[in-house]
Image (cartoon, rainbow, N blue to C red; front, side):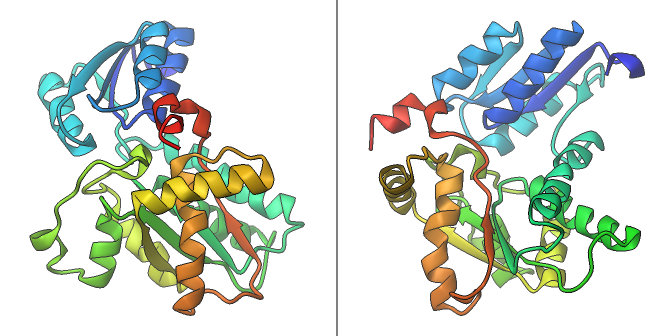
Length: 269
């Protein structure tokens, strides 16, 4: 940002992206405003403040935070780091696709199950696969890209099943999986394009099932999943039942955080 002459930036966030931006801005001496829902776990708010970011709390969801960002930034004096409104986050997340290919010896899995909020990761991984095909690094069939959402806020699921009228009956609510609560993803068309091109699918998981998945994996594997990661795990049974994936498939599930980032959630387990 400093290289481009940016000295002030602003972001709406459900938590993690705001913390990451605040940390980078602290290092670069860039003024940062982080706008997040008031119900966001306190640890995210405290960490942003520790990095000297200005934290603005909004009663509502991340879509309401986006409106607040537009209000604060009416004069366009801040660089807006909102999802897909700048090119760099997509390029950064694209490295996940390259790492997946390299770590699997350039033989991609049959399906990738991804917890999709804003959907940048899903779009970026698919973009990386297209690039690797053009460079001759990989060949053969590409994975089905499967998006998993929280039942309380599943716009990608709603749009997948009713592309024209999904907004008419869509009523988002908060979820224990804060990162999945994005009521109207800016990249919705790109998300749907990836799902259709890959022959993928979309599944939803309840908060109760997400909590159960965190406990199951912690007990069996000694891994404390984030709620978003747990959603991918709990979606598997339904995906098998509806024949979206087969038991013989090679699968990759993405866990996009750690459960220890939310002590309040842990106390509920």
